[in-house]
Image (tube, rainbow, N blue to C red; front, side, top):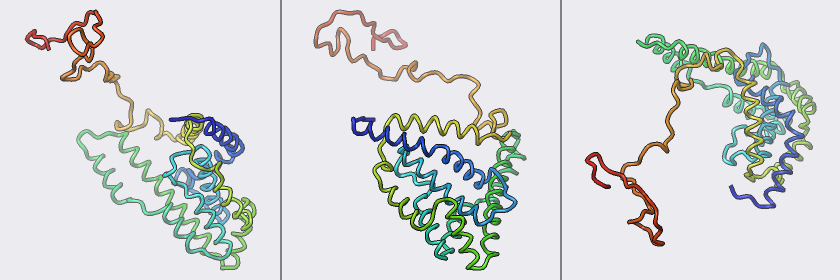
Length: 276
């Protein structure tokens, strides 16, 4: 990774901006994980749908400030701002489509088949079965959260829904004028892709901490994992200890020794004792 003085200055400015955002990012990241199945909400009012779009935007701001690879637009934060702006004007259909795309459409049938196959396998792995069942529950929670969100939206009249959305957007700092400013800020060089070691290190530290805090359920802990993700029982040898077939010293007394150096280099021999 090539570093220039200008890139280092920009990286430090990005870190300063992230320091101001970090607390809100952590809260938003946890909320997104809960909506995505870590928690099943008993109700999901319109304000929480606005909160979800807001949280995705905050997570994208973090990715931009820490220069996560520019082609990964997983949170779609800019689009979330556009959805919030249009939703306040009464356009709901695109919000429904977005929530459905994010929170539904999972292969429950195929997953159930995998669970049954794992249970009936000759070498049944209880850890694998538990992981598959846990994953199916997580996906079910995700779909249930979608249904709760849609129920809260559909039960309201258009005027009442618009008022709810406008009030929630005002609470989360997304009035139409604020959204225009936020979209403009995302065009600032501060949110551009500038890879730097300092940014990568901060991202690793932050996400390692977040991952540990999110993966707290019993089925997520190492002792409950399936064999596919468990640690190896024996350390694998380094690649450096394996002799590559056809290996030849590039510098030796008899080969490629332009300077004529005198040193001892014991040649390799084959299984018959002949020099190779």
